[in-house]
Amino acid sequence: MSDFFKYRAYIFSFLVILGAVFYVGYYVGQETEKEQAKFSTVLNKDGNSQIDFDSFWKAWSILDEKFVAVASSTEKVDSQTRVYGAIEGMVASLGDPYTVFFPPVESKIFEEEISGNFGGVGMEVGVKDETLTVIAPLKDTPAYKAGIKAGDKIIKIDEVVTAGLNTSEAIKKIRGEVGTVVTLTLSRENMRDTFDIKVVRGIINIPSIDTEIKKDVFIISLYNFSAISSNAFRGALRDFVESGRTKMIIDLRGNPGGYLEAAIDMASWFLPPGKVVVKEDFKKEADAQLFRSKGYNIFNENLRLVILIDEGSASASEILAGALQEHGVATLVGTKSFGKGSVQELIDITDTTSLKVTIAQWLTPNGKSISNGGLTPDVEVELDVEKFKTGVDTQIEKAIEVLNQI
Image (cartoon, rainbow, N blue to C red; front, side, top):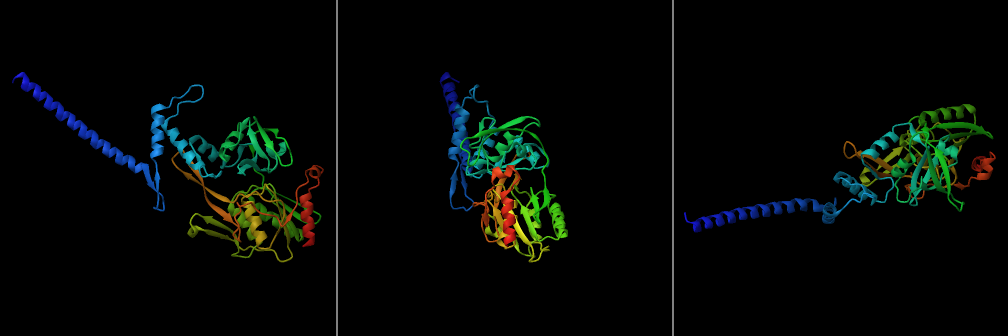
């Protein structure tokens, strides 16, 4: 074969190979675009509109291509951490402080928190008016003994500004090794300047209930709605009945709530069977659930009942107080409650991550949203802090006065 024909053969072979490569590249490109299109556009659940993910993938690609981790400020972040960050950002966009994504480390911490006794300072916190706020310090805990009060705004935790932190992030910073100190910068109503309180972290054993008799009135102080609260409350009611008295105060001040079942059980001692205690209102109206009294209803019309609430009364406290108020069983005395009437469910996303998501809200028997401003007392009275230091509880005194007028 001449050199000319050999050369033509080489050219032909090269063109064939080039064409094949072009075809394969074109085909792969088309398939890749099809695959990307699947992820770039997602239908809303209602099927009426589409969500464009192009901007997400473009930003992801730019970060892959251009981002340089500056050693002095940023550690190299792997792709999985970026995925977690994207989920956290999506969750934060909802604007609900109680809906939180937990990456592996945070998920483990949260599981430990809800498992029982724990190390910390002993207070319930939430976000109110976009500010991290103390719902209530638990009785006889480090926070309680340090003088932290319901309604205190937490401005900083060990020099970390809390603006923008959700409750889980804040709790993570407040927690620490037992015996170590956390400094909280607080603001308090009627105080012009912020101030610091140092609290020594300890093992927190959640208290349950106390009873006392004052001026012929039987007082039940309930500190939470834990797994053992229902039995403790039943015992306190037995003591009340055996005392022969007819006037009762249930003190829910500083009670951050707990188990719904405990609130239903306690309300059942005062309501006939079938009376609505609370409505659980889901996204779909068809899923709504009514929780009704079990109908223990052991008290007659001779009972005189006042429930004390304040800005530290939240969740299950508001369910119990709201039900007995609206059914005409109890008079509410004190100050407005916290307004924590949402329901969260903890859902595993992977073996090591989870999502705490608000799935419903609590409505009182008359349909009032507890989250919408909390409960308003029938008789409003502030606690006189100065008198309280001398042993005079002005809210208890007012509650007794109201009982004597019923």
